[in-house]
Image 1 (spheres, rainbow, N blue to C red):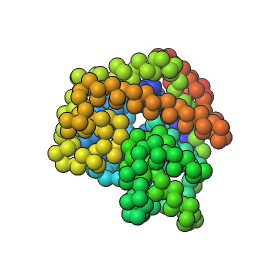
Image 2: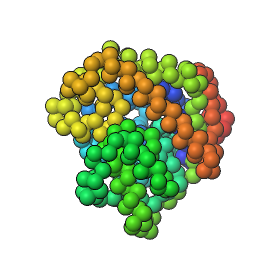
Image 3: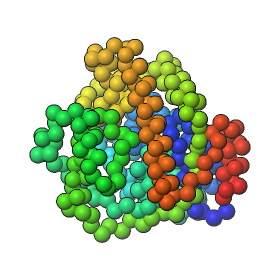
Length: 303
């Protein structure tokens, strides 16, 4: 087989990480590049679902890149991801190995496959001041006025929505410079899981992380060194658990709201992936309920 990039994508709780690791082990010389916008942060393990044990197959750890590459509290972005992806991708090919891109952040995946021209967008303090009192719904309505591509899957806090508007406004006013970021040809595999099964998996996994893995403790440790506002910027688990730890939400209500938010997030992920198909990407969907060994064989058949 040649060394063409393989991309494995799917919504949260679809089993894509475990599948990517087993596929890499089956190929023998493959390495994984993560496509997750939050797993880049050190110390944010449970809430981001790193599931590092999934990378161990038959006692051997599959190499994985772009996990734990920056500190919690930093504002990692798509521009940086493109550069980091290309560095990891080129290094894997230089070793004669095969790269596997795996994750659920559709914008990151699409940006590296198509080679979007991105810039390091500076802060717009005047814009932030003007929008600071807007609700999340109002901010999303503003963002919808822009026709260019933006990430709608992670916009669950006003701060993230303001940053998205900031980026879109910058591109509208300044355009993009001619930056040499090539497109990357890839075989794309999507892990398809029935909606009800996906919802059940999400709910079960959330309770396991809360009751067995001490996700609340992870957030408490983060709050010892990172301001609460910066933790909540990451959304989902980190937003709602921070509100609980600060005493702004009772535990049961926190769990209820968080569970709803994760279900909505997974739905937005699938909407993005279907949109990728409309934008010209060929995604080979496989049944996520099949045994992982059978999923691997089906992917090898596609290859």
